[in-house]
Length: 387
Image 1 (tube, rainbow, N blue to C red):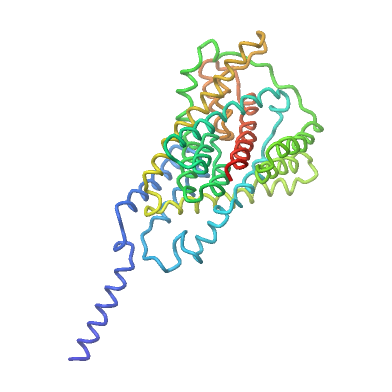
Image 2 (cartoon, rainbow, N blue to C red; image 1 turned 90 degrees about the horizontal axis):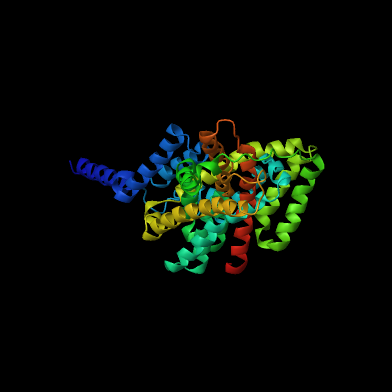
């Protein structure tokens, strides 16, 4: 009897120990909130088709990162030696973003920008959101390094946001990355009302001259000249700019097709999976649900609005100095943010609402790819005086 009683006590003790290690025993309201956020991201990706390549990995990563567990078992993304921690290494040390830029360069056609170089100015004007958010973050009490990392959300470029925050404010990386990717996905929702508010019906139907034919030599020279100009101005942006222009040279040289196809296909897909899953997993409720995270989301929304405002208004201003027939449709001003190619598609969709025969996509791709370069340059500028 004594032996059976001891055995029973042993079983009860082991059962209690097991139960204390389950997710149910360690569950908090914060975990539940974040799991719902992850489910919402997956819903937006599948039901609304908002950036599914990003939101599905991030949404599932949020769920994975918020499964409650007892610390010390090398499970969580922040626990040294865990599998997720090893995968997260590429985010924390800024390894994944340059690889993403390599793939972007290999899939990007800069012809619209080469044929009409003044569209580069629209991409630069849209970076107003970055510096506006930087100033706002400083006013709200963030340190200069934190403010710089938060400000880059205004560029609507997830990889750039991750790269800069990993250097300046790694403790805010999760909130900044989720904010940047969220607003990238919501481009079709956020931008159209701003574009309609800032433009007149007459401006929305402006027809632009078809882009001129760009030669192969121009396409090959562009990434070479581009890296020399931008990297000499902001050497600190070299990891992003170098990989972007290198990927584009692989594409345009036409003699490295296999390398270009690998960069824009399997490589960027693998890195997107890793970056999405680990960034999502980094949103553990215990570290993510803070007042700072909420402030970052608010600043991110404002910066995105300011960036769209800056791009559209810049076009309206330069149109004052252009002759009839040479004016730019201000609906492509929104494409200055570097959410490629979604913001350019928004320009096309809104333009077709007012003129079914006025196709703006090719024109919008000019400021859109300029925005990619602009956000990387802005990141380099911030890094140069804040690091």
